[in-house]
Image 1 (tube, rainbow, N blue to C red):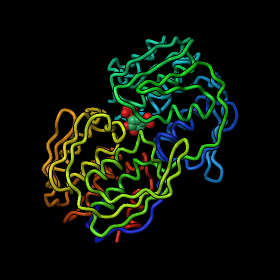
Image 2: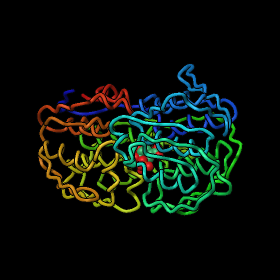
Image 3: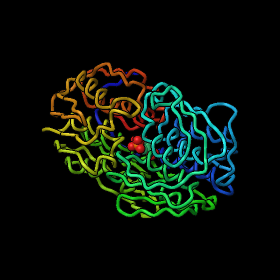
Length: 424
Ligand code: S3P
């Protein structure tokens, strides 16, 4: 797909539903008694993978008037699937469902696409095995395909080496089936949607500092869920507004949970003109975000803020390329094990556009402000890479060709239409 420089970007965009919250709504709805109604569900390929996995586990899920209805069967109502589950490209589906399957009384095999088959699963195999589940990497390489045989679980107090909501959530979900309370402590706080939503369904999950604790065998009861817009998707419009001269964009209905809002904090620190409007403080707070073109400058990004913007680092790197001065991104080695190796892929693609960027062991160093030019971009079928370079192409000279551009269907199927709708 080809992209060219635009004059400016103005208008309003409503962001589709949050991917993390959409996954969890289906999973927890399946484990609850009664029918959970989800409005604003993200119909991206990842969340559709979660739906199809739970259908295979015997849960009725239907769509009516753009709402998703999950007819839950309670904590012990899932049934064995005749065929392996296909988690597609979705790390969240793979890791969270493993926590649930660890507590079932049957065996399940699960597998995903080529990217999923390279992503590290030792991080869930270890704690779930410690809890007593039998969980095996079928090829013996600590990746999917996995074979999981649920067992009566015992609780653990687990010290996670990585700040990962997927690891934390897998353990908390297994903890629903354990004998006594189960705790996970992380090196830095990761997104807390599981804790918030499980409590809304009637579970007891406590968060104190870096530790989340779940109590076993609650009765979960169906609820109505309004999924806010995904800040990770809003990030592309935040960057567009900031880097394309003369732009002014109102991004509506964005989730601004403090465990996800690092992109807003970083964009402001880089000199971005960003205003939050219509802020609603509830379980999952939301706001409209007004962004105006700004002269950005480089900053250093590292430490505890990293988990709050981990998926936004590709687009932050694009912002840094258009900023004056140097941006250092560190403490982000997790980028290497996302849908692609996002350090290498950003370095190669931004270099191809003429940017001065160097990869490091745990991030990248970008000397911004050089004139960028169009290039052929290999997305590596990573949705966040494709969207980041579509944005980069709007403010540089020449034509940019993005290979595998259709992979945005993972998290934002209408991304290009929404972006083009604002471009002048
Ligand atoms: C997610 C957690 C993060 C994030 C991913 C979604 C989730 O992954 O990168 O896109 O919904 O829990 P990690 O837990 O691997 O950091």
